[in-house]
Picture (tube, rainbow, N blue to C red):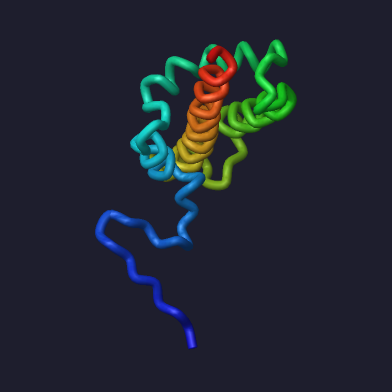
Length: 121
């Protein structure tokens, strides 16, 4: 017999990947004590600079560059899962890849802000 999950209003099922979605990022920024969205956005350039100079241990330079390269190459590439010549639908996969990368970098910038605050104090 299968156990049914009770879902409260405003709560996503556990089977959804909340942790990797834009909605999960929004919920993470609203958590008490967590850096807010604007603080994370303004920290992105510092995060990238710290990763490239190898001062931030939370993300390797090769991983950042690889993910950025994959995202940029997919968005610019004429070979897509859904061809770009199909209006609107053709751009959705490019948008999804861009959203995936931006969500990841903003989520990491939150961890960077926490690391930065902890290392100064």
